[in-house]
Length: 363
Image 1 (cartoon, rainbow, N blue to C red):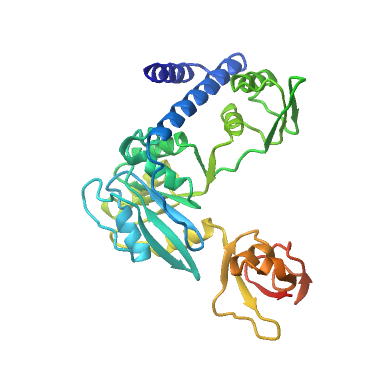
Image 2: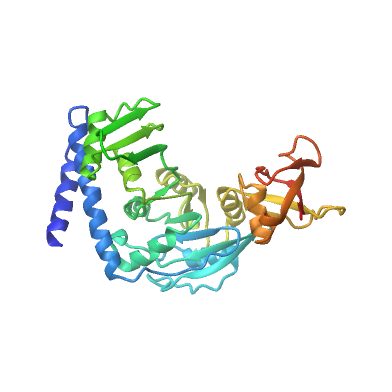
Protein backbone atom coordinates (compact mmCIF):
# COMPACT_ATOMS: atom_id res chain seq x y z
CA UNK A 1 0.00 0.00 0.00
CA UNK A 2 2.83 2.37 0.85
CA UNK A 3 4.30 1.61 -2.56
CA UNK A 4 1.07 2.62 -4.32
CA UNK A 5 0.88 5.87 -2.33
CA UNK A 6 4.47 6.72 -3.18
CA UNK A 7 3.92 5.96 -6.87
CA UNK A 8 0.75 8.12 -6.90
CA UNK A 9 2.69 11.04 -5.41
CA UNK A 10 5.52 10.49 -7.90
CA UNK A 11 3.12 10.51 -10.88
CA UNK A 12 1.28 13.59 -9.58
CA UNK A 13 4.62 15.43 -9.28
CA UNK A 14 5.65 14.37 -12.79
CA UNK A 15 2.38 15.68 -14.24
CA UNK A 16 2.51 18.92 -12.24
CA UNK A 17 6.11 19.65 -13.26
CA UNK A 18 5.76 18.74 -16.96
CA UNK A 19 5.10 21.47 -19.51
CA UNK A 20 2.32 20.32 -21.85
CA UNK A 21 3.08 20.57 -25.56
CA UNK A 22 3.02 18.35 -28.64
CA UNK A 23 6.35 16.80 -27.75
CA UNK A 24 5.37 15.89 -24.17
CA UNK A 25 1.68 15.14 -24.87
CA UNK A 26 2.06 11.37 -25.07
CA UNK A 27 4.27 11.08 -21.98
CA UNK A 28 1.89 13.19 -19.86
CA UNK A 29 -1.07 11.21 -21.20
CA UNK A 30 0.58 7.95 -20.12
CA UNK A 31 1.40 9.38 -16.68
CA UNK A 32 -2.27 10.35 -16.26
CA UNK A 33 -3.45 6.93 -17.40
CA UNK A 34 -1.10 5.19 -14.95
CA UNK A 35 -2.25 7.53 -12.18
CA UNK A 36 -5.92 6.84 -12.91
CA UNK A 37 -5.35 3.05 -12.82
CA UNK A 38 -3.46 3.27 -9.53
CA UNK A 39 -6.10 5.46 -7.87
CA UNK A 40 -8.85 3.11 -9.04
CA UNK A 41 -6.93 0.16 -7.58
CA UNK A 42 -6.49 1.92 -4.21
CA UNK A 43 -10.13 3.09 -4.21
CA UNK A 44 -11.42 -0.44 -4.91
CA UNK A 45 -9.33 -1.86 -2.08
CA UNK A 46 -10.56 0.84 0.33
CA UNK A 47 -14.24 0.45 -0.58
CA UNK A 48 -13.92 -3.28 -0.06
CA UNK A 49 -12.76 -2.76 3.52
CA UNK A 50 -15.20 0.01 4.49
CA UNK A 51 -18.94 0.31 4.68
CA UNK A 52 -20.64 1.42 1.49
CA UNK A 53 -21.73 4.60 3.22
CA UNK A 54 -25.15 6.04 3.81
CA UNK A 55 -28.16 4.42 2.24
CA UNK A 56 -30.64 7.17 1.47
CA UNK A 57 -33.85 6.31 -0.34
CA UNK A 58 -34.60 8.81 -3.08
CA UNK A 59 -38.07 10.32 -2.96
CA UNK A 60 -39.98 13.10 -4.67
CA UNK A 61 -39.29 14.75 -8.01
CA UNK A 62 -35.53 15.13 -7.58
CA UNK A 63 -32.75 14.86 -4.99
CA UNK A 64 -30.44 17.76 -4.09
CA UNK A 65 -27.40 17.31 -1.82
CA UNK A 66 -25.89 20.22 0.11
CA UNK A 67 -22.09 20.03 0.04
CA UNK A 68 -19.59 22.22 1.84
CA UNK A 69 -16.94 22.48 4.52
CA UNK A 70 -18.04 22.24 8.18
CA UNK A 71 -19.86 25.32 9.57
CA UNK A 72 -20.58 26.79 6.12
CA UNK A 73 -24.30 27.04 6.94
CA UNK A 74 -25.77 23.94 5.29
CA UNK A 75 -28.08 23.14 8.21
CA UNK A 76 -29.34 26.73 8.35
CA UNK A 77 -29.95 26.66 4.59
CA UNK A 78 -31.78 23.33 4.77
CA UNK A 79 -34.05 24.69 7.48
CA UNK A 80 -34.57 27.90 5.49
CA UNK A 81 -35.70 26.28 2.23
CA UNK A 82 -37.49 23.16 3.56
CA UNK A 83 -38.52 23.78 7.15
CA UNK A 84 -36.58 20.68 8.22
CA UNK A 85 -35.28 20.66 11.77
CA UNK A 86 -31.55 20.11 11.25
CA UNK A 87 -29.43 20.90 14.31
CA UNK A 88 -27.62 24.20 13.87
CA UNK A 89 -24.39 25.14 15.63
CA UNK A 90 -21.55 27.59 15.11
CA UNK A 91 -18.94 24.87 15.50
CA UNK A 92 -17.63 22.22 13.11
CA UNK A 93 -19.20 18.79 12.55
CA UNK A 94 -22.67 19.62 13.88
CA UNK A 95 -24.24 17.35 11.23
CA UNK A 96 -23.26 13.76 12.03
CA UNK A 97 -25.71 11.99 9.71
CA UNK A 98 -27.76 12.72 6.60
CA UNK A 99 -30.65 15.08 7.41
CA UNK A 100 -33.45 15.08 4.81
CA UNK A 101 -35.91 17.84 4.04
CA UNK A 102 -38.49 18.51 1.32
CA UNK A 103 -38.49 21.68 -0.76
CA UNK A 104 -41.92 22.37 -2.24
CA UNK A 105 -41.75 24.70 -5.23
CA UNK A 106 -43.92 25.05 -8.36
CA UNK A 107 -45.82 21.93 -7.19
CA UNK A 108 -42.58 19.93 -7.20
CA UNK A 109 -41.54 18.03 -4.09
CA UNK A 110 -37.73 18.06 -4.08
CA UNK A 111 -35.73 16.00 -1.60
CA UNK A 112 -32.88 18.02 -0.05
CA UNK A 113 -30.14 16.21 1.89
CA UNK A 114 -27.76 17.85 4.36
CA UNK A 115 -24.64 15.66 4.62
CA UNK A 116 -21.68 16.04 7.01
CA UNK A 117 -19.27 18.82 6.08
CA UNK A 118 -16.31 17.51 4.10
CA UNK A 119 -12.62 18.11 4.77
CA UNK A 120 -9.55 18.07 2.56
CA UNK A 121 -8.83 14.49 1.55
CA UNK A 122 -12.53 13.54 1.71
CA UNK A 123 -12.36 11.80 -1.68
CA UNK A 124 -9.71 9.50 -0.17
CA UNK A 125 -12.02 8.62 2.72
CA UNK A 126 -11.04 11.21 5.35
CA UNK A 127 -13.67 12.72 7.63
CA UNK A 128 -16.68 10.67 6.47
CA UNK A 129 -15.71 11.34 2.86
CA UNK A 130 -16.59 7.82 1.71
CA UNK A 131 -20.13 8.11 3.10
CA UNK A 132 -20.67 11.65 1.82
CA UNK A 133 -19.58 10.89 -1.74
CA UNK A 134 -21.69 7.72 -1.86
CA UNK A 135 -24.72 10.01 -1.35
CA UNK A 136 -23.45 12.55 -3.88
CA UNK A 137 -23.13 9.95 -6.63
CA UNK A 138 -26.89 9.33 -6.41
CA UNK A 139 -27.89 13.01 -6.44
CA UNK A 140 -29.79 14.72 -9.25
CA UNK A 141 -28.21 18.05 -8.29
CA UNK A 142 -25.27 19.04 -6.06
CA UNK A 143 -25.46 22.40 -4.30
CA UNK A 144 -21.97 23.59 -3.30
CA UNK A 145 -22.13 26.06 -0.43
CA UNK A 146 -19.14 28.38 0.02
CA UNK A 147 -18.57 30.76 2.95
CA UNK A 148 -17.77 34.23 1.56
CA UNK A 149 -15.06 34.52 4.23
CA UNK A 150 -13.28 31.36 3.01
CA UNK A 151 -13.29 31.47 -0.81
CA UNK A 152 -10.35 29.05 -0.93
CA UNK A 153 -12.77 26.31 0.11
CA UNK A 154 -14.34 26.42 -3.37
CA UNK A 155 -11.28 25.05 -5.19
CA UNK A 156 -10.69 22.51 -2.42
CA UNK A 157 -14.27 21.23 -2.76
CA UNK A 158 -14.11 21.10 -6.56
CA UNK A 159 -10.89 19.07 -6.31
CA UNK A 160 -12.49 16.57 -3.90
CA UNK A 161 -15.59 16.27 -6.10
CA UNK A 162 -13.44 15.59 -9.16
CA UNK A 163 -11.24 13.08 -7.30
CA UNK A 164 -14.37 11.21 -6.16
CA UNK A 165 -15.30 10.54 -9.78
CA UNK A 166 -18.08 13.14 -10.07
CA UNK A 167 -18.03 15.45 -13.10
CA UNK A 168 -19.98 18.56 -12.16
CA UNK A 169 -21.93 20.44 -14.85
CA UNK A 170 -20.51 18.26 -17.61
CA UNK A 171 -21.91 15.67 -20.00
CA UNK A 172 -20.19 12.43 -20.87
CA UNK A 173 -18.12 12.99 -24.04
CA UNK A 174 -19.40 11.23 -27.16
CA UNK A 175 -16.77 8.49 -27.25
CA UNK A 176 -17.52 4.85 -28.06
CA UNK A 177 -14.95 2.14 -27.31
CA UNK A 178 -15.64 -1.38 -28.56
CA UNK A 179 -13.08 -4.02 -27.66
CA UNK A 180 -12.25 -6.46 -30.46
CA UNK A 181 -10.40 -9.80 -30.64
CA UNK A 182 -7.68 -8.67 -33.06
CA UNK A 183 -6.48 -6.04 -35.59
CA UNK A 184 -5.10 -3.59 -33.01
CA UNK A 185 -6.55 -0.16 -32.24
CA UNK A 186 -8.61 1.59 -34.91
CA UNK A 187 -9.48 5.25 -34.32
CA UNK A 188 -12.30 7.12 -36.09
CA UNK A 189 -12.91 10.84 -35.46
CA UNK A 190 -15.62 13.23 -36.62
CA UNK A 191 -13.94 16.24 -34.96
CA UNK A 192 -10.43 17.70 -34.86
CA UNK A 193 -8.47 16.86 -31.73
CA UNK A 194 -5.72 19.51 -31.57
CA UNK A 195 -4.61 18.40 -28.10
CA UNK A 196 -4.83 14.64 -28.52
CA UNK A 197 -2.74 12.80 -31.11
CA UNK A 198 -3.53 9.24 -32.23
CA UNK A 199 -0.35 7.89 -30.67
CA UNK A 200 -1.40 9.36 -27.31
CA UNK A 201 -4.84 7.74 -27.61
CA UNK A 202 -3.24 4.38 -28.44
CA UNK A 203 -0.74 4.68 -25.59
CA UNK A 204 -3.47 5.48 -23.05
CA UNK A 205 -5.63 2.57 -24.23
CA UNK A 206 -2.70 0.16 -23.95
CA UNK A 207 -1.98 1.40 -20.41
CA UNK A 208 -5.48 0.14 -19.59
CA UNK A 209 -4.55 -3.15 -21.31
CA UNK A 210 -6.78 -2.45 -24.29
CA UNK A 211 -4.72 -3.61 -27.27
CA UNK A 212 -7.53 -4.33 -29.76
CA UNK A 213 -10.47 -1.95 -30.08
CA UNK A 214 -12.53 0.25 -32.38
CA UNK A 215 -12.81 3.77 -30.94
CA UNK A 216 -15.14 6.43 -32.35
CA UNK A 217 -14.69 10.01 -31.08
CA UNK A 218 -17.36 12.64 -31.79
CA UNK A 219 -16.32 15.20 -29.12
CA UNK A 220 -13.25 17.41 -28.85
CA UNK A 221 -11.82 15.67 -25.78
CA UNK A 222 -8.77 16.01 -23.53
CA UNK A 223 -6.67 13.07 -22.36
CA UNK A 224 -8.43 13.28 -18.97
CA UNK A 225 -11.83 12.93 -20.66
CA UNK A 226 -10.51 10.01 -22.71
CA UNK A 227 -9.45 8.27 -19.48
CA UNK A 228 -12.91 8.96 -17.99
CA UNK A 229 -14.54 7.27 -20.99
CA UNK A 230 -12.21 4.26 -20.76
CA UNK A 231 -12.90 3.80 -17.04
CA UNK A 232 -16.62 4.50 -17.67
CA UNK A 233 -17.40 4.86 -13.95
CA UNK A 234 -17.84 8.61 -13.63
CA UNK A 235 -21.07 10.35 -12.59
CA UNK A 236 -22.14 13.44 -14.53
CA UNK A 237 -24.23 15.63 -12.23
CA UNK A 238 -25.46 19.24 -12.55
CA UNK A 239 -24.39 21.64 -9.81
CA UNK A 240 -25.05 25.08 -8.32
CA UNK A 241 -22.42 27.17 -6.51
CA UNK A 242 -23.96 29.24 -3.70
CA UNK A 243 -22.01 31.95 -1.87
CA UNK A 244 -23.31 32.17 1.71
CA UNK A 245 -22.99 34.64 4.62
CA UNK A 246 -22.77 37.66 2.30
CA UNK A 247 -24.44 39.71 5.05
CA UNK A 248 -21.11 39.60 6.97
CA UNK A 249 -19.11 41.46 4.30
CA UNK A 250 -19.47 44.53 2.11
CA UNK A 251 -21.44 44.28 -1.14
CA UNK A 252 -18.34 45.03 -3.20
CA UNK A 253 -16.29 42.33 -1.49
CA UNK A 254 -19.08 39.79 -1.94
CA UNK A 255 -19.26 40.59 -5.66
CA UNK A 256 -15.49 40.14 -5.98
CA UNK A 257 -15.55 36.73 -4.26
CA UNK A 258 -18.61 35.70 -6.28
CA UNK A 259 -16.59 36.11 -9.49
CA UNK A 260 -13.62 34.24 -8.00
CA UNK A 261 -15.69 31.14 -7.18
CA UNK A 262 -18.04 31.30 -10.18
CA UNK A 263 -21.05 31.58 -7.87
CA UNK A 264 -24.50 31.19 -9.39
CA UNK A 265 -26.15 33.10 -6.55
CA UNK A 266 -25.26 35.01 -3.35
CA UNK A 267 -27.37 34.45 -0.22
CA UNK A 268 -27.56 34.77 3.53
CA UNK A 269 -29.11 31.58 4.90
CA UNK A 270 -29.09 33.10 8.41
CA UNK A 271 -31.00 36.23 7.32
CA UNK A 272 -33.11 34.25 4.78
CA UNK A 273 -31.98 36.59 1.99
CA UNK A 274 -32.44 35.48 -1.66
CA UNK A 275 -33.77 32.03 -0.68
CA UNK A 276 -36.76 32.35 -3.04
CA UNK A 277 -34.39 33.01 -5.95
CA UNK A 278 -32.38 29.96 -4.87
CA UNK A 279 -35.50 27.78 -4.89
CA UNK A 280 -36.27 28.87 -8.45
CA UNK A 281 -32.65 28.18 -9.46
CA UNK A 282 -32.85 24.65 -7.99
CA UNK A 283 -36.13 23.94 -9.83
CA UNK A 284 -34.70 25.17 -13.15
CA UNK A 285 -31.37 23.37 -12.74
CA UNK A 286 -33.16 20.08 -12.08
CA UNK A 287 -34.78 20.67 -15.50
CA UNK A 288 -38.28 19.82 -14.32
CA UNK A 289 -41.45 20.48 -16.32
CA UNK A 290 -45.18 20.55 -15.50
CA UNK A 291 -47.73 18.32 -17.20
CA UNK A 292 -51.48 18.69 -16.61
CA UNK A 293 -53.53 15.49 -16.70
CA UNK A 294 -56.95 15.15 -18.33
CA UNK A 295 -59.39 12.27 -18.11
CA UNK A 296 -61.34 11.40 -21.30
CA UNK A 297 -64.61 13.32 -21.43
CA UNK A 298 -63.64 15.63 -18.54
CA UNK A 299 -61.96 19.00 -18.11
CA UNK A 300 -58.19 19.05 -17.52
CA UNK A 301 -56.95 19.37 -13.93
CA UNK A 302 -55.18 22.72 -14.15
CA UNK A 303 -54.83 23.04 -10.38
CA UNK A 304 -51.98 20.64 -9.66
CA UNK A 305 -49.56 19.51 -12.40
CA UNK A 306 -47.57 16.31 -12.58
CA UNK A 307 -43.81 17.07 -12.29
CA UNK A 308 -41.46 15.19 -14.62
CA UNK A 309 -37.98 15.67 -16.09
CA UNK A 310 -37.54 17.60 -19.33
CA UNK A 311 -37.50 15.39 -22.47
CA UNK A 312 -39.70 12.80 -20.76
CA UNK A 313 -42.02 10.77 -22.96
CA UNK A 314 -45.62 9.69 -22.49
CA UNK A 315 -44.17 6.30 -21.50
CA UNK A 316 -42.33 7.98 -18.61
CA UNK A 317 -45.59 9.55 -17.40
CA UNK A 318 -47.40 6.20 -17.65
CA UNK A 319 -44.65 4.53 -15.60
CA UNK A 320 -44.88 7.25 -12.94
CA UNK A 321 -48.69 7.07 -12.69
CA UNK A 322 -49.19 3.30 -12.51
CA UNK A 323 -47.13 0.22 -13.42
CA UNK A 324 -49.96 -1.19 -15.59
CA UNK A 325 -50.46 1.94 -17.71
CA UNK A 326 -47.60 1.07 -20.07
CA UNK A 327 -48.98 -2.41 -20.81
CA UNK A 328 -52.56 -1.19 -21.22
CA UNK A 329 -51.74 1.96 -23.22
CA UNK A 330 -53.76 2.49 -26.43
CA UNK A 331 -53.03 6.10 -27.41
CA UNK A 332 -52.96 9.59 -25.94
CA UNK A 333 -54.13 13.07 -26.86
CA UNK A 334 -52.06 16.18 -26.20
CA UNK A 335 -52.92 19.86 -26.01
CA UNK A 336 -50.14 22.38 -25.66
CA UNK A 337 -46.59 23.21 -26.78
CA UNK A 338 -45.64 19.71 -27.96
CA UNK A 339 -48.74 19.13 -30.10
CA UNK A 340 -49.25 20.32 -33.70
CA UNK A 341 -52.91 21.00 -33.00
CA UNK A 342 -55.20 20.76 -29.92
CA UNK A 343 -56.03 17.17 -28.94
CA UNK A 344 -53.51 15.59 -31.34
CA UNK A 345 -53.55 11.78 -31.15
CA UNK A 346 -50.04 10.53 -30.36
CA UNK A 347 -48.06 7.42 -29.38
CA UNK A 348 -46.41 6.40 -26.11
CA UNK A 349 -43.02 7.53 -27.54
CA UNK A 350 -44.10 11.17 -27.86
CA UNK A 351 -41.84 13.67 -26.01
CA UNK A 352 -43.74 16.11 -23.83
CA UNK A 353 -43.06 19.80 -23.15
CA UNK A 354 -43.66 22.11 -20.19
CA UNK A 355 -47.36 22.99 -19.66
CA UNK A 356 -48.69 20.25 -21.95
CA UNK A 357 -52.13 18.78 -21.20
CA UNK A 358 -52.11 14.98 -21.51
CA UNK A 359 -55.04 12.60 -21.88
CA UNK A 360 -54.14 8.88 -21.69
CA UNK A 361 -56.39 6.18 -23.16
CA UNK A 362 -55.90 2.62 -21.89
CA UNK A 363 -57.47 -0.71 -22.78
